[in-house]
Image 1 (tube, helix red, strand yellow):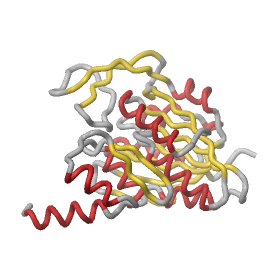
Image 2 (image 1 turned 90 degrees about the horizontal axis):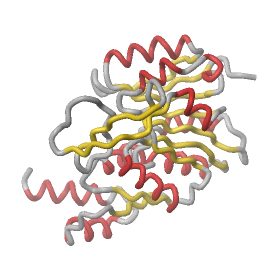
Image 3 (image 1 turned 120 degrees about the horizontal axis):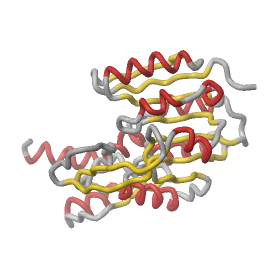
Image 4 (image 1 turned 180 degrees about the vertical axis):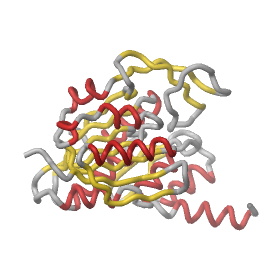
Amino acid sequence: MNLAKRLFHVWRGAFCWDNPYELLLDYHLLRRRDPIRLQKDGAQLVVDYKSSDMTAAQDILIEGMYDQALNAAVSKIKTGDCLRYLNLGANIGAFDVRAWQFAKNNGLDIAGAALEMNTATFARLVINLEINKLLHILPINAALAAEDGQMRCELAARDTGQSAVGLHTLPQTTVQMVVAMSWETLWGKVAGPFDLVKVDIEGAEAVWLEQLTQSQAQLLDYVVIETHSLDLHSLCDRNLPALGFELLQKDSSGESTRVSLWKQKNPAE
């Protein structure tokens, strides 16, 4: 990329946010490498500029990756009531911040829980909940797994979107043992009902799809789920309709990634 084109992309990227000059000064002029603070529509998000934090923030706060799901959820809630959600695979909290923006703009309170296994990412999640005063959101540092226990987690240097894996250490990784929690145990901690569940847990989607029960599913009005393989797409398409959900919309960026939105047809009375 030539210099003129690179400068154009730097400038355009900074002006996606409400504090563009601060971003240009801190990162591109002063070459600051520590986490910096993005601002957008009254919200703030601390990100590590060199990791996948920025991608998550842009996808959710700028591109509106989950806006259709949030629109559907809030449209069913009366003004003054509460948007109740569960965020499985919270990353740094960009979805939580976006949910809060939707709730605020529709005259709603907000409550929920955010699950994140990566300890470094979890620290930024907690910071982002606190600086936006989202004190009714419960952050949980654990990995969703088939059963309770511990899980070996190999985290690529500076990245925040890693999955829990098993046997071989990859180059430039930090190996951590994280709390593993079954869906049944997690449900006992956060028990619904929920207006919206967002699922993007880097390979553990199968655990959730296989452990979700009929009675639990009836307490979930909407589900938005990101799956990353043809096998997971198929599992999603089999299990969710069997649990009473109907497909409202799906976006695909190829065989590897798909985001789909589902509505519960038979909610609990």
